[in-house]
Length: 468
Image (tube, rainbow, N blue to C red; front, top):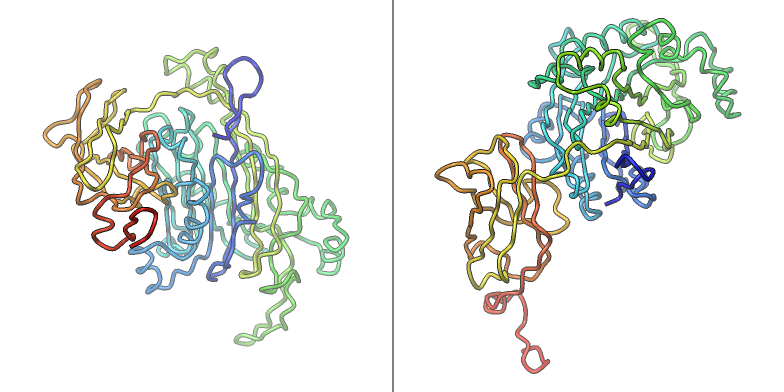
């Protein structure tokens, strides 16, 4: 577990969050995204949140993606699973995609997951623009991630602002304490927000960029300008824009738009000016709002201080090496420093005896804390390195006649004919149907190679050290 203690008192811990936003321009993914995910960084990441825009959403492709994972999700899962990251959830609206990955150790403490979406493009009837969000409780703190793709073009800055406020107003969650986005303790707002650099000419823009004098452009960045007069934007923080504007590039190059102007129906097109269209911002719930909440709850202000969350950004940059799109991906890494409000899993799972496919296997589970369990909950057998809750080798239903009582030890049997024949390292995971996530794991254990593996020709029989 990469979460580390911060300081010697108070029990606070820092969790590392790695975020990516990328308008992929309907392109297929590159062969390798390891550098985008910075898998070799130390300390290791606890949570990955990846937001994409303009994922290929032609009708045929979109329907196929509903049946099987889209190519971007597939690549991310294939890359992150061997490193011990599991896909917790994802939400898709046309070309917008938002995916959450976490280290297995954190999954029992990621609860109350809900997602929603808001269409803004083409009068709200088509989801080519808008926002998708995922909210969840992380060790008891409420987090929300909002991935947006807002209106394009230089002159639509105010429309982008209107769309953002509309998304905030209309997105609702079925949670009494956090019914809307801004009710969460920490909100991350990111995506292709499409804000441009106003007033400056092309020559000045490119000269400033080529000389890495990005600060000359900050004052005319539309989002920065709006932040001076829009109260809601003043609640959001953003790291300094010390990286190249991320749009618009020639594909498979680090050169800004060089296309020849084209004429459409008598209108002459222009080269797009470089701009920081792709952004990551965050907001910690203001203290004044929290004090109002305390008046209607049993929590004291002292408790609130004790459980406060601190967000610090370690990195804010773009990776210009990726060229499949005319946008470059933006990376933000953060430390979330907080005190855990929840440290006990809801369920305990225990593997009994030695497992192999030569005989039925036994395990037990115990409900440690009341939650909305269901007779449709199930326990999956997962090979170490699994990708998601649905990536199980086999599963067994929980007690099927009634919901188990708190503290009751329930014994469950897995049929030997459904167990893996070959040896391997596995873990049991309890899937909550109501929470739509894995909420508990057994310790890792080994399944032994079965005698049936030899009989079925999966391995060669070994006699006196010689393979027969």
